[in-house]
Amino acid sequence: MAEVAPPGAGGAPHPRTPGPDGPLRIRGGVGGIRFQFEELLAGAAALDGLVVQLQAIEVEAEAVKVALFPHQTSSYTSGSDAIIAVGESGREIGRVREQLQRIGSDVRASHREYEFAEAHAAIRLRMGWGMPATAAGPAPLDLGLRGATEGAVRDLNRMIGLLVGTPPAMVNLAGVAVGPADVGAILRTILAVPALAVLRPRPVLVTRGETATKSVDLSAAGMLRELDHLGTTSEGDIEVVQVDKDGERAWVVLIPGTQPGSPPGGSNPLDEAGIAEALGFNSMETGKAIRQALLEAGASAGESVVAVGHSQGGIHAMNLSRDKAFLADYDLRFVVTAGSPVGGITPQAGIGSLHLEHEQDWVPGAEGKANPDTKDRVTVTMTNPVILEPGEDQGIGPAHKLSRYEEGARLVQLSSDPSLAASTAALGGILGAGGMAKVSRFKLTREAPTGSAGKAGAAGRAAGR
Picture (cartoon, rainbow, N blue to C red):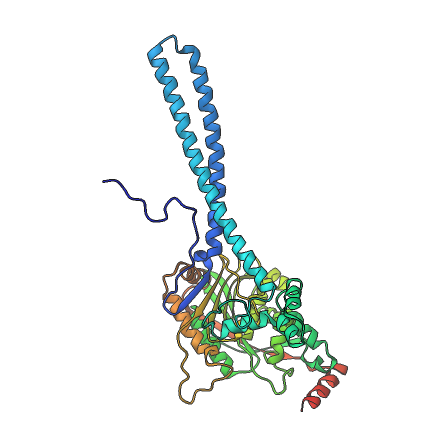
């Protein structure tokens, strides 16, 4: 019976978007589209090398065939057979070479189509067509709070133009030049106002607290559970966990989310002003404090570090991945964030990360940028319904609670998706499964404002009242 080729066989290869894993939508990692294309292009490059080798063999086969012609008369039958055999071999090699060339061309054509689609989408966004509420054509039925927030922030420049009466055509042209809103630049501009000087970054002091040896769960879910306990039992505290694995030490830094201050800009660097420092100033002071805490905990230069953060804490954690001073001292291997807007942060190559989001949590979209799809960066968006328990405080949104993300982290750990399995294995390879570890708490305290900054801040708060 003749074999039947599967549907689609022989065409240009196309990457596939990873399917959902229960309530989890997965982007990036070894199963992500971007990495699939990187692998395809690497394969195309390898095929190019084979094509060059086969071309050289074809030339040699032709040379052998030509060399046999003078000897054909010595033994006509065997000589002819030899010439025919060498010629057929050369032609077969040529056919294989042509097939490999076609495959390589198909791969590159597929890549060009993908790049064109990406460029087309980017142009639409820059022209202000990215926000579902104002885009031309039908909008998705439900993007969730996270997607809607990202669209609104990304199109902030366009929306402001429309609000002040700029004609839509001019707004679209301006969008091409200005591009999506830069949240960091907006924050720096706002905080340049003298009355808001108290909200600008100030030096952060580090005070060592209690140290205890206890059993810890070093999975993503276990670390988020410990982070939840830390955030609800202290203000301005971070934890540094010393892990001994196979005779080598590794370190975990746990950074809580935003802890509201009264007023913001006070002594707690994790208050609302800390969000501005994280998004607008790359955690310039908090990053120094984290480095100091590791030093006081006993971490040595070059040792492995994993940073874990919720909400604002996740931004601080991810900022470490591009902090040259921090990376000069420590080997940051992995970052875990929960409900954090970190799409605009590009880590140093080789640093892995796992980003947990929920489609009904608006906070991860607050920067107006989606997390890039790369081999080392996996984003998991939870889609399960969020139900507020009777008497439970809603906070800034029930989907933003750390307990929800702990549930998602447990699902990640159980998943067989290739991207999630690789991410879980990478984290386990650094820290192990857990056990007894030394846990140290450190109090972070923002220095009091001095001089005109303090007076301006007091005047601003009085004006607000």
